[in-house]
Image (tube, rainbow, N blue to C red):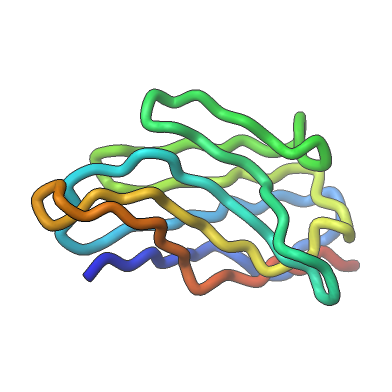
Length: 121
């Protein structure tokens, strides 16, 4: 079984920073793209940032310039550093990853359980 576990969410004041982490565990053969999504109350889940296995990144316009996605392949972990946080960044943040397992014979997209980020004074 493969699992993704996020951490690092919490309450932060406007203008503050947070670093989210997401670690994949299990018998993993390889990981392709990894990403972060978020879902605010009453809204659909939206893409925040992605990073592929080669390290190329992409960002939603709403977070571009304020956030950095990175990954540590040795630890099967993806990070999201968020700076200059705004109230509109308040949401549950989910990570996902495209993972090969079972010796490279099984490919699936996995999601974490989500971590709450609240930006408020």
